[in-house]
Image 1: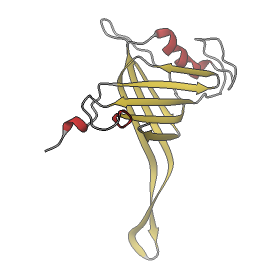
Image 2 (image 1 turned 180 degrees about the vertical axis):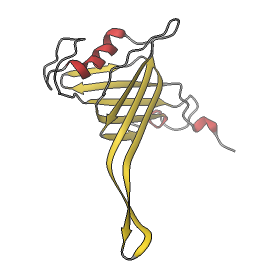
Image 3 (image 1 turned 30 degrees about the vertical axis):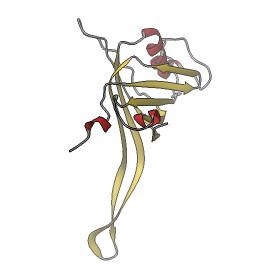
Image 4 (image 1 turned 60 degrees about the vertical axis):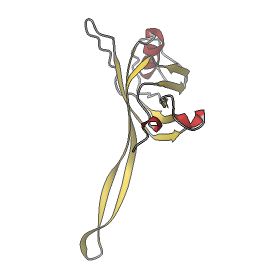
Length: 167
């Protein structure tokens, strides 16, 4: 029999984003979707007189980040999103809410905190899972709303590294 009290359930958690240039840190509203996918290109290696694969190598690792959230503070959340489009360089922000004509790409750190449901055994630290994705850029700025619906923001980015921990 499986003890289901020791499993995570996707009801509690927070997502925060930060950037060091210029310094900003935002905890998003109610997170509806989060997906972190670590992937790499794989190459089959052949040779040495055999028709069978001899080895597999990987390269071009990346960490895809997808975040969907609702019930947010529009000033804070649109502020960090516009940082991806309004910075003129690594230290000088442009005018908030204005698209700046530059090729500078700010990088963010995304931290997801996933909390286990009540009743999980172990210390409080063991009841949490942190996923920290660094070097994340967001190639687009979607803002969608529908009549009679919660406004939901879906952000898709790509990071360079990820660390999973419980502290």
